[in-house]
Image (cartoon, rainbow, N blue to C red; front, side, top):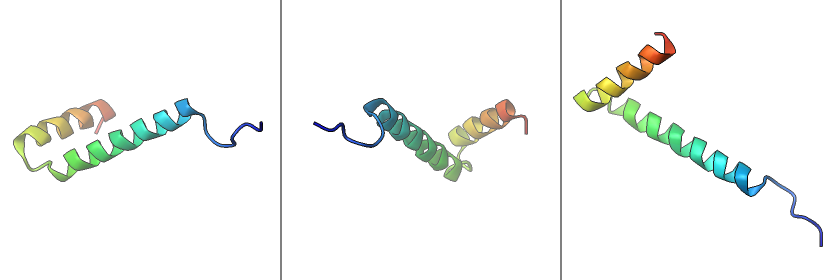
Length: 50
């Protein structure tokens, strides 16, 4: 049998996790006016150096 062409299971899992992380970060960013989210955004900005 021919092996299925495309990304491996590990690569698919990694892409899904990266996508979920991106969506989670976007969701927190959209709520940055709320106190709990503002702390997360400021903490992240501190790590980035802005």
